[in-house]
Length: 253
Image (tube, rainbow, N blue to C red):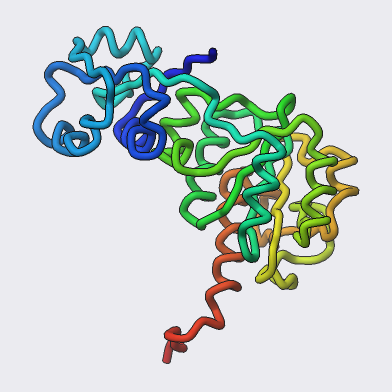
């Protein structure tokens, strides 16, 4: 069975809150400090095993000095299968899905997960052979979102997209060359937002599977945005459209 290492207060905290049964051991720096200790006190009770170790041992375990004084080992990948992902979407009204086609930088992946969690996305989907794995760096950058956000890893991304089309979702791809703007599209219904990886963007078959291709208006000298920044903009445009007509909102004067 796969064992993975997570580190950072947010990542370990969310793991213990959501998947405590997968945790083998939590490693806490012996001289952690009162403030950080207090941020973990309520969740350490969920850990089967807690070890107090020197900072040097945490650095060896995590491969970095930026561990914030806590790490954990956990079993399993924490990822949903294709079938489980489709079942999840079938139970949700107006699903919001973020699909990543080939993101290779772990920091970008972590930032995308954090944006998805913040926007309330129901699912993040990645291609098994095209995306960076769910590593300790990804979990650290995601600040707990890698443990709270539902993530599916699928073998055939085009097949999965075709499948969720049949469940009533619109597939919207981000393409810098698209002539339609993100802001021209109604994203208030069930939507899967597809973003390509660094450099190459979406693969041809992925692009052809999309119902719509849209771009972001670029007013400056650069032609595109970092994938994590673009993911945040796309996700929160969906949030804006879904909340704009809700009662209780008011116009600014």
